[in-house]
Every structure is written in structure tokens, then in C-alpha cells.
Length: 480
Image (cartoon, rainbow, N blue to C red):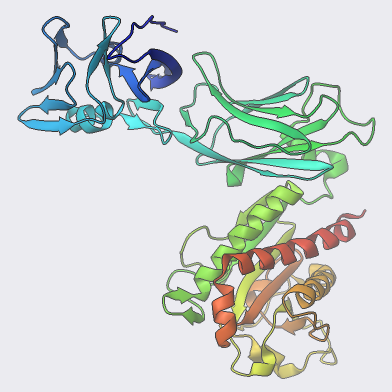
């Protein structure tokens, strides 16, 4: 790192703060940033040298001239305006000289250099990182779910990334190598019973996320969910002597070992409708497709945090998908479970409520608790001749529907225990080779529900209800 000793300037002290990080040609370089009167500055000449831009400067005359192709940039000492060809561009702070070094505010890059450079410099969301050359930053977000016996830290990457995890005493480090990484925070200000802090460190030698644990006796495991670009760090209290050697994080692939092959590895969440298929109208500008996607995303987050397995959505955006495409995605991935989220749309007030649906196959007798015309009550779902793929999983689908219905009765149906799950000849469910249930939440025809379903807190409640049911179902289904 280059260090400068700054003199007093304009009656205020100047001190060196954290660093600027510059990614260039598969290498990472560091420039110290200067703080003067609460303003951050970038060393100008050192940055121009990284860009290999020709320049001339004179501290005594008070100017710097920069050539970029046919363009000329002129900076004047103590002025906050820069001349770019014939135009004047204002900066956040005046150009200054300290310890015989030219300093500019970092917005010089976005407002001036990117105005004339043929290949723009990518600026990270933090404002501290710059990418010179092709490519973009891989950003990530960190969220924590706290518990007395278990804490889960979710690192959501914006793009795929190879992350190396290591454990040292009471510290877990996730290293990103030389991949251009940007974080909006250095200190995530997170603390719970098991985790003391989460800090992002970016230096010339390392780019890493450091999770400081409460003590070194805690167990830790890192799981990679590649399809979701997620890393899960699970921290738990020591419960047995079966864990690996101290300082070793079990690999993410541990779930695929022979003794765990019966365990859940993959769940598919289907957000009903999408694209040109808008589903039921909730209210002006809001359709069933919007609500189902919002709930599905909240459910995915909850399941990833609580279960630490791969959770996949059939759609992440407002896109049109056929029933065949949804089922094929789940079958191809050998998903362990399939849930399709919909909103009910009944014309009769007595039909208000949330219901779970199971595929009605030809193997089911007509004497089931559901009447033959029950399928007519399912709105916006196409009924076609069914396949037999669901037959082997039907018992488990039925058990899951019972548990889901009980949880929805408790939380979404006002404690009314009378609603029961329903059978219907749904093509989507009948072609799935795994436990599969379709859920219809509430009644879009009810004015009060139309306002409730768009409330993020209610959507969280729906996701929490489904999560509670799956946590009850999982030990039954996974039991050898």
C-alpha cells in the first residue's frame, strides 16, 4: 500500500482512511483514499497511471491536463469545475493538492473520465471499487436468521462465483479470490447469540467475508446452492461428538453421501400463471401472477434459511410458462417436493378460504370425500386427461396436503378446522413424479381479501404457514 504523510491544508487536518480497490486485467490494485474536511479524495496521478493516460501537470502553476484520444481534460487547483473539451463539469469538491499529490473527488470518474473513455470504468455500488476493462462486479447481499441453537447466514450472489470456505478457531472466512466483488457494506452490523459480527474485507491480498462466531466450540457448515447462487453458513451449538475435526467445515456435497441420499436435496416452488397468463384480477394493476411470484420468493427465502437445501422457483420473473414446462423442470431436477402457489377466485362467499389440492387420478375411487364436480371450483386451472406419474407419490402428496390444510386452517382460515384438502384432476400435479400439492390462497372475489393479499406482511404469513407445514412433513417423509 502506498502511504502519504499529509500536511495541514486549508486549516483542516487530512488523514488517510480506507482504500479504493481497482480491478484491472485479472489483477487487483489498491489506492488509499484521503479524507479532508469530511470529503473523500482519490489520488489522481496514480489513477491516471493505472489507465495509462498521458498527462501534464504543474503544482506551481496549478493545473493538470489529460489527453484521452481526441479529448482534453483540464483541471485547476482549488476549483470544483473541470473543463472537458468545451464543456464545464462540476465535481462534488474542489481539486486539491496535498503533500505534493493531486487529489480529486471520486465522482471525477463517473462525471469526467467516463464521459470520454471509449470503455467505461464500472463503479461498484459501494463507490469504493472500480473495474477497468470488460466485465462487471458480482454483488452480494447478506442476511441472517437468528436462533438460540442455530443461526443461518445467507449469502446471495448476483452471479455464480467460486467461494472457498475455511474455519479458524472462532472465525469462518469465505474467500472470493480475485473475482471482482462489490458489497454495499463493510460491516453488516449483525449480531446474535451465535454470531458476533459479519465483516467484508477487501485488500490487495484478500477479498473475503469474515463471520466471527461467539466461541470456538460452535459447529459450522457451509452449503452451496448453485442454482440459486446462494451460500448458506449454518452455525449450531455442539450436540454430539460426531462432527468433523475442529477447524474443518463439512463440504457442501456432504448431503449427497450414501447415508444422506434419502434426505431432501431439492424443492420446486411454482409461482402460478405469469406473462400473458395473468390469472385472477386482484385489483387495478395487480394480478394473481404478481401475488403468486411475491409469495413464492418469500417462501424460497424462508425455506433456504430454515432447511439449508436447494430451493428452485419455476419462474423468477413475469414470464409465460406452460404446465408442461413447469412439470418438466421439476421432474428433470428430480425434485423431492413440488408446491404450486395460486389465489382462489370463487364467486360464492361460502367458498372463501385457503385450500390444498391433490391430483385426482384414475386409481382413486369415486367414493372419496370429494364430489365429482369438486374440480369445477378450481379457478383458472386447466383440467385435461391426466398422466400416471403422480401415482407412486400420491400417498405422500395426500399426507402433505393434510398437514398444509391444517396449518392454513389455523393461520389463514381464522382457526376454522372444517375446510379439508381437495382432489382435482390437475394436469400439472398428475405429471409430477414426487409429492406435489397445489395451494389456493383466499378468494380474490372478496374485497377485504383483495386488500389483504397485496400486503407484504400477509404474504410473509402465507410463506411462514407453508414453511411450518413443510417442517412438520419433512421428518415423516425423510424417515427411512
